[in-house]
Amino acid sequence: MDEQAVAVQEDSAVADATAVPPAPPAVKKTAARSRVSKASSATPRTISKSPAKDLRILEQPGFVLHSWPYKETSLIIDVLTRDHGRIALVAKGAKRPHSQLRSVLQTFQPLQLGWTGKGEIRTLTTADWVGGMLPLEKSALLCGFYLNELLVKFLMRDEAHPDLFDLYVSTLNQLAHDEPATIVLRRFELALLRESGLLGDLTRCTQQRERVQAEQFYVLDPERGPRPAMPADSVPRVSGKTLLAMQRGDYTEQSTQLQSKLLMRFLLAHHLHGAALNTRQILIDLQNL
Image (cartoon, rainbow, N blue to C red):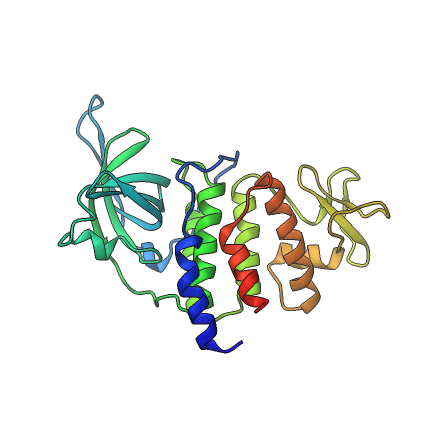
């Protein structure tokens, strides 16, 4: 398929790909501490006027994941922030023709955000473009929307994931520099499940309490972890070599890429309880053209 055909397909698919429900199902998870990314080097400030008044946040690194109209002139934006996790903000007047927010509140653009309030939806007070990242184009753009859809569906609001925030920044940069999506996306999916508390150590069989052996085949029970494969299993079988490589983040071998793709598709579908991923289906359709 030539690049022009891909571009046409992507342009028509973006609107559907970004139609993420504003109130996705929540999943239980844990949080970890992080590295400092280039796009989030500024030190955020938190100012509390008094215990009885709303909290005011200033200069918080973040990205818009999704937005939808609110009343006649405003937007509600779902954002991923470094130190406050995923939150919802109302951007008042953002739909007005001359609003400066119209050009700032775009996906995949590093921002410095400020807001006030303590309810489920807070009020955006400032949004400044930081810059320093290449734009996503062609298939990389759809991959970016796929990342955003995963984050909206898997992350509960108001729980910080600084490690995952840094990985999100790194993943966007890798996609923008045309690094292989089959590897970049697998690493992000794996990290997301771990940050969500849905995946543990891939190198040990939890029931047998034995280390995974490279030459054997296993299935990954979504609730219990790896176990030796049996003839009656209908779920994806993966080699121990693949599990060990995934644990190291090494996807150089073709067999690891193929098996990890099937495994992650199975795990994500299980934890989404059958809910469809719009962007994944669009990517599959484009690859089959």
